[in-house]
Amino acid sequence: MKKMLRVFLMLPVICLSGCWSSIELNKLAIVTAMGIDKTEDGYLVTVQILNPSELAGDARSGRTEVVTFKKSGATIYEAIRGLSTDVPRRIYVAHLREVVFGEEMAREGIGKPLDVLSRHKEIRSDFYMTVAKGSTAYDTLNVQTALEKVPANKVFDALENSEKRWAPTRTVTLDELVSSIVSKGREPMLTGIKVYGDPESGSNVKNAQNISPNSGLRLDYLGVFKRDKLVGWLNKNDSKGVSYITDHVKSTAVNIPCEGDQITVNTTSSKTKIKGKMEKGNPKIDINVTSEGSIGEVECTIDLTKPEKIEELNKRYEKDIKAKIEGSIKTVQEKYQCDIFGFGEEIHRTDPKAWKRLEGNWENEFANLDVNVTVKAKIRNLGTISESFQKEIEE
Image (spheres, helix red, strand yellow):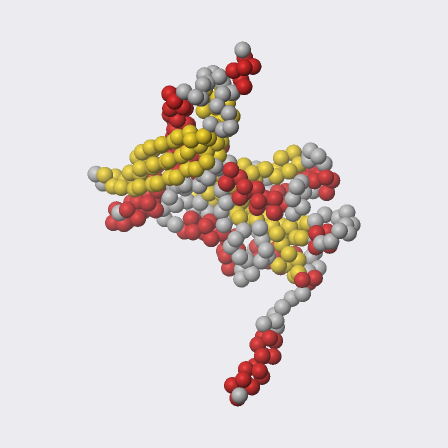
């Protein structure tokens, strides 16, 4: 009985202790995206804040679903606090969906911004990191988007969708980015975001109401980093090659030549295994890729009912994947000399003693690293028809 009485008396204390630091929702400015640019005197921080009155209920005033604010400061933290002079609510960053760095900021180094993001107690690590290719973070976050009311959600969902279905892009969280920066055998990479059309018209709410918007946001390809500094960009094929090497291809389209035209193969599954080894004191990497696909489109008159034709397509399918992988390795080795593939980590796992000797000069070792690529690819499905209509049209 005494124990029950003590528990009963403690209940009010427990309940009160759970809400002593609570803040009402109407006192919070919920940030969905943050942009960081470099200025002469410090940093420019841009935040995209939800406008709850336009998102809840059926009644609309015609205002935008999000509002963008910006503030300069000697430090990023100072700029964030300085936003309180414009925003009548407390800045709340626990629901971030995207952080975008201006390209100039990324080339100078993102180490200091990452310190702020990692240190902030309210920030979770489940948002995605990106770079504004050829523009500022402010211009990127100032664009109204169609289909999605909240531009940050548009970018977040597009990154996930593109990684699953296209392959030249990548979702990277805060923890993944920091881990690759501090790693001795892997360098970071981030997906770029381009503002297309007229950036000034993109901030107008009518831009998202047009059937063909004057401006918008489009995912680009992968940006290559050396430690915390952006050093350059990869094209579509090289970005796909990186995804194959790092085992991030879930599905993608592969065009292969076919009797004067081409066939598109839909890759339905792909698996990559990387093995590092030491031979005669030199590091070597073996890459083995196994892919399967189905016929997605036929633009030639090939007879897909003949096994020898399918086998020929399989070889061309393998050749295309191998060319993308070897092309990306060559580009990164010759142009950037930074190991975004994680080959150094694989050597470290395979032979820790050898890695101790190689670690200090891994940049040069990577640039001359011998990489052997083996690809096995097969077309498993021809689709719902075996012969193309193209043959009938041409006859």
